[in-house]
Image (cartoon, rainbow, N blue to C red; front, side, top):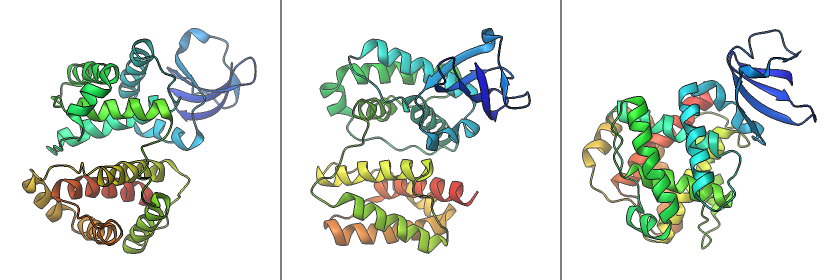
Length: 276
């Protein structure tokens, strides 16, 4: 195996014997001068083929132990669910787990939608997601609520189809592009629309538009969180208000405080990484 690009000291882009690219996890494999031939394959812990380049940057940001759990959960899903999963699932799921733990540590709690419907309509995915929440709580000493299983189940369902649910009654791509343009203007930044940060935000917006279409917006039962976020992230709140006004004009629906809280968290996370 040839190591051709360092991602960090323990993760690298490699070529196998058939010259196929893969991501390899292994202690110290990115430490030596690159490129080099890795002869001791016993140091390799996990390998992933077909990871899209725009997702590879997250390998630097997310702790290895979270990737370990994500990989284990993807294996569990593959063995429990009769479906082919997008190969990027291990990274998008790790990113979600990392974000969920971060929100928990900051005492930010948002109830995901679709809990009842998911448990009934996607029993296999929801069962794996429930096991995932229990595993995450035990491994990282946190107490994510059982409702978090709905969000993880959505990741599994989404990865089966490789795309997020579309709000087909709207020109969703145009609306999302307009929303990103609003964020760029207010935050005075230029967003790489082909990068992972944009891809993740676009996925959130696709789910949001799908909820609007199905009249399944999040319940407005956490005004305290919304008010706290308004005070802590004032500029982000004003940006989210611009987005709310735009969406109201386009869809005739108004985002409640719960949807706004979630939108603000995504905008704050999105912009902080674009500006980094």
